[in-house]
Amino acid sequence: MSKIFDYADREFGLICCGEMIMRLSPLNNEMLIQGNLLTKQMGGAEFNVAGSVSTLGEKTAMLTTLPNNELGKFARKSMTLNGVADDFLIFDDSKYKRMPIYFYEYGSSPRKPNVTYDRLNSSFQRMTINDVNPEVFGKTKIFHTSGISLGLCETSMQLTKDLIANFKKGGALVSFDVNFRRNLWSEPEAKVEIEKILPDVDILFASEETFRKMFEKTGDLKDIIRAFAKEYDLAFIASTQRVVNSPKSHNFSSLVYDRKADTFYSERAYENIEIVDRIGSGDAYVAGVLYGLLHFNEAEKAMKYGNANSVLKNTIVGDISCADASLVESIMADHDNGSTSEMNR
Figure 1 (spheres, one colour):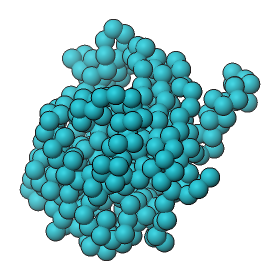
Figure 2 (cartoon, helix red, strand yellow):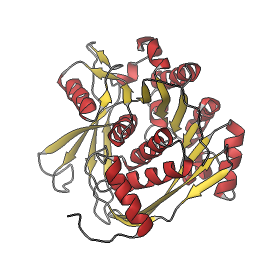
Figure 3 (cartoon, one colour):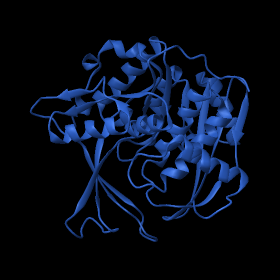
Figure 4 (tube, one colour):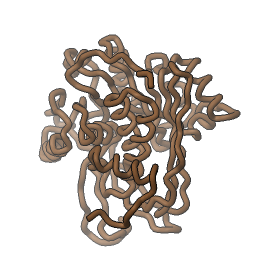
């Protein structure tokens, strides 16, 4: 199978930039209006990707700004515990320093999971390109960010655009996950800004719904993706396909496109996934695909690792998948060949 990319020899396989956010969740499936106890952990779309790719086996780093207080120190500890290098971490010492927070309530049919944000004016949202050490632009094979960073605020939007341009100039491949969030902006607003950065993107993650609703494309999905890749000179596109049977049961698969080979890859969907915690499962998909591209440089393997890593994350509490490559590969093997036992022992 032909290789997709000619990677530069760099210190890191992947560097991500985005806002790290603290998650607080009630215990025992309680609602926020109940009880008094909350568990805390760190998340954030780009951090989730960096942490999972690191656990799978590639060297990663995080580019972000954290408040210089106990919450920022906790976030940094979470970063290093997940194997993500903190070489490019920036601490905010200003009197406005702030850790963004979100509250997550687990769902149980017919009650859906619910997210409540408290993230306005975080330390990251004041970060600019002038805060970044320019040495970082020549340090990685792939730079990854998302539509969340692009849509947080005007300052973060400009930072994201500047980082994409500088990493591209530094010889990195640019990976971008549309990751649309209605609480940040409308689909028309997102479409305008995302289309501005797409010419610099090499690897795109976008769901079928995104292509049809945000980008207003019609017709067969493969025809849409092939035309989109040609229009914006994209080398690789990955599109997830999730069916929600209930808050506790999902089906999941994806379709990926290697433009160089003009070839699509997909596999039979994982069905009736038992959902423990779906937060971060999309980021786990991105991480699995990027790991597959970095480690094997093959589209089909990237698709398989993405699917299996995402499926696994649904069964793991927290924002970040802690599944290593051997566990992901065991899930892939069971999916391909059929599980031979109900327990690993």
